[in-house]
Image 1 (cartoon, rainbow, N blue to C red):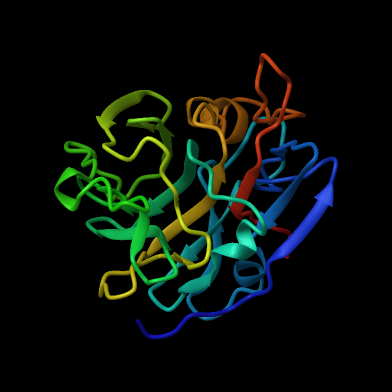
Image 2 (cartoon, one colour):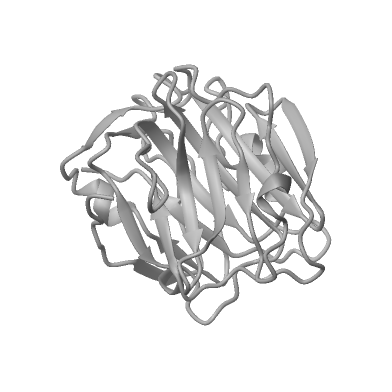
Length: 269
């Protein structure tokens, strides 16, 4: 496509890492991990094709002002090496992808694409009507005809949606707006590998004419398939719910916090 804007990935090593919208007052706590912000610098500078807008909540209880999001047009495309998100680490085998997003009505595009070193797309999150989840491991499984397809789901109806996808073993579950759960088979290999030597692309696929246009408030990957089930509680709660003081993706049994890759985080201007 036309061009990619390269940006420096910000690595923050700290005990407390903060995420989501400053207007919402929502805090994501992650201990002993790095917060990897891919889109932060790019969106925060408000380049061509990006502007600030009101997010999911025009008013949130116990906070001042609305949630903050970004309005994105076709000119706002971005790619970066996957290694910048996972330096020295493998892409998680089981994981959650979570987004708070409002695509333009009637649109159909990929919000996120991951390519391997040979340029083969291994992961893709589509937003639109009956979106597909593209997943292809190092052995080429599943085949394209077996990609999970979420029929009856429309993410491009002109409304805000909280989309949480849980990938676990041989299944994938879509949790839409905290209520609707749809599970599909994911016929991948027993020990699947997603290459981290390629690139991650925001808003499209390499040869697609369609690009993401709409509003986006949050986009993250968590190395825990259970995080998707807690998205509306721990990451993006309802507007009438006060912003929690502490949010974390923590294993209730071990107390360990999973590595969180935050791809989008609204910041103060």
